[in-house]
Length: 464
Image 1 (cartoon, one colour):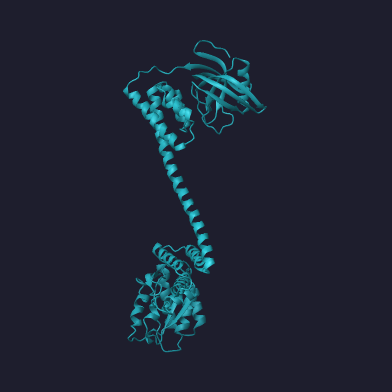
Image 2 (image 1 turned 60 degrees about the vertical axis):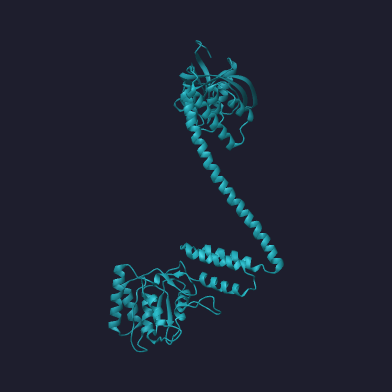
């Protein structure tokens, strides 16, 4: 390497840095691993210990080309070199000056460049510059408060320095700000521009770290809470086992798992069921109310909340099924096929009602079964002859002993889907007395605007 003038160097070996920018005025340790860098280092040792460090634009590139490195870097003097093995060398360098590449070539497997030394502009200290430096120091102090592992001697040297160039480059060197911004700070020769670049990027990095810290704190809080709940549950389980009352806790977790697996979309319904589970967990095992709540939960969780039959309407196939199942009844079958045709055109089958009337034995029930078969729906039959109590339709309040859901909910539970074809048999044989009018309760069942939110007295939650 030849030094032409006071400001230029010829054929100085070049070492490219990955993911780092270094600044003049400091000493640093480096591990040299890449073959290209080892060759450059060996050439520098043979010459006058001078080497040019420059950052590559993409740190993932193993052997960067000329256009993949920045044109401004630093000249360093090698103070110490220790060879670990043939593939690794440790060095101690003193970074002296920043310089710009004038010409660069790759020879013998490494870069050699002609560089020109760049000096920072002279500056005049004023209140604006002092304010910028104070802002940078304050931001750096808050940044150090978040990362907790900044060496104290580094912090003290920056905070006690009055040299703005040293302050800005030391802060840039010791923080995790963007590499491109570090390079801009190195390239810039104006001290005000340097500090403004640093303050803007450091402020952004600080805000980012605050958000990250907030997220991590919340995550740790949740983990700590989960661990705390786990230990408390284990303690409660042991205490309950000693008292012979371990079943309620086991059942609580079992019911919670079942509710989660149901994937009920309505949050109010899910919260209602979870409230009942919490109530159960607080009751003594031998409490009469606990058996009532368990029966209620078993009933609710046994309902097909998300299970539906997929409709299949084919007029030709429907006609064949009706003709196969019933001889004659042409008017009835024609009316049913008209009804199904309208449904097919509307692409809607939900909540529709057909009234079948005629004397006993003419085939009303079997016609209903055939319709269920044609539309690919489960069939459920409810016999209403002689029903006098409204609770048979809408269910009993669960607070009563022996209470149960009404016939509608039971039919759906038996069918296993929430859209079965339900036959309300002998609906004209219902009667009313002092216990209420069951025929009036049927209005909600048959009204397609209401039955999508049918509320059984026992369930106390809407069921579609």
